[in-house]
Image 1: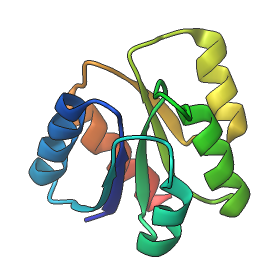
Image 2: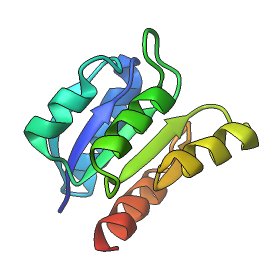
Image 3: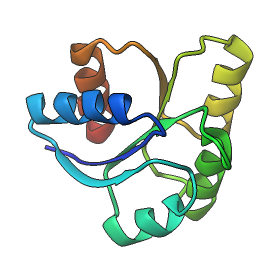
Length: 120
């Protein structure tokens, strides 16, 4: 069971991710609708995993990822996006993301990834 933070500007996507966490018996420790304040919430809640949307207004996921990784290089961040742009995916992995998951989600795939990265 992992403690998970969800960061996504879409209410519907956050709801789907929460449903996935319930199925996998994971704990939701924080839920944010923008990239603003993520690092502060991360330092408070110390999640095992962050599910981080790539495209958000004001502060995108890549900027948030860089902040988190500069604070904790061992942070487990799963980037979430509807875009399969290979350059963007490479940039996220290079910046420290654990992996990159495409929307729409395969519930089991997300659960397997959370399980895998929390064991490593």
